[in-house]
Image 1: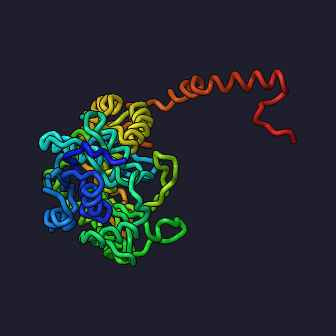
Image 2: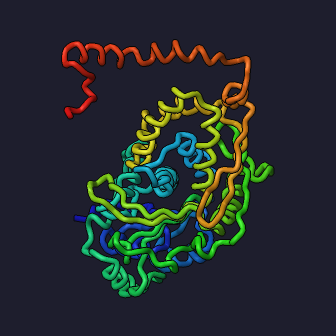
Amino acid sequence: MADKSLKKVVLAYSGGLDTSVIVPWLRNNYGCEVVCFTADLGQEEELDGLEAKALKSGASKLYIRDLREEFLTDFVFPTLRAGAVYEREYLLGTSFARPLIAKHMVEVAELEGADAIAHGATGKGNDQVRFELTVMALNPRLKIVAPWREWDIRSREDALAYAEEFNVPVTATRKSIYSRDRNLFHLSHEGGLLEDPWNEPEEVMYQISASPENAPNEGEYVEIGFERGVPVTLNGEALPPVELFIRLNKIAGKHGIGRADIVENRLVGMKSHGVYETPAGTVLRKAHVLLESICLDKHTLQYKDQLALKYAELVYNGQWYSRLREALDAFVNVTQQNVTGTVRLKLYKGNLIVAGRKSEYSLYRQDYASFGEENVYNQKDAEGFIRLFGLPMKIEALENIQRLGSSRFWKDS
């Protein structure tokens, strides 16, 4: 039952179908004032006319904050430096946007004297957790309204009907319905024919990347410069984070880089199928991995890879504002002290081809690795090393031969 004591609610507003109908639904069911909040994370034309649309839907006002630089600096880059990838492929483009949005919603709620925060995440997805855990961490006194867990609307068709009834302007149609999330880092697609993972995505669905077939026939080289694991230059030019991403997205998207078709395990227990376009993020992920390969020692790199799995899980599960994430960042910061250098990649029809990497902190020594003559490495030393390294295996084999007559790895003939 609706809490009639709520006077003012701050709604995470994208202008899409769900959040558009939530505005009149909140007014009709809670009798409250609705203040909309939109984070500019790089949606570009999606922000056009948003204020007029929100007001026409029944909101009292709309806050739009340009959070692009904060998004990249405080959320994207730390995750990139950590090497966090969820279930082998997902670069977490939606996951780390939600805690930033919710953080500013809490600020607006406090500024407006609001009682609650509302979001358009469904009861089947991950975003509800990400929004609400952030609110719990930053201001647990605020109440949370999640219409998808309350209302009778059960499909996008129902939502379209509700919008039509209350004269809410929407862009989704019954013929082509995709649930999308766009920011500087990525564009995700869910729903529609993607609900069956056997279906191949239709080409018209993609919006920021060319198909490999239609990409240029000539490859293009890009050079990414890093300082302490953070990308700072593109093709030798120092750029602020937003401009770097805008340029790299265009270059990589043109060459069909960054498409991913993923079936992932949601936090709530079910699998979901999504298609992601992450042009610049894919390039930077690859470049960062290549630079770490020459700047990190073996044991640090291996342990960092283990922690990256936990970092990805925390981000995916909405636990950004947690003590553990802060602790993992402290570890990552140490590992990135020497991850400074340049990586060169060739972009060609959906492929990222390694073309070179260099760093003043590189641990790769050509004179050590060379197969030619050198004075820094005595190959005879390898004999003693191998004897010691293999000693446990040798002892076990000798014991088995004495007891069984042969090594246990010999099969009975």
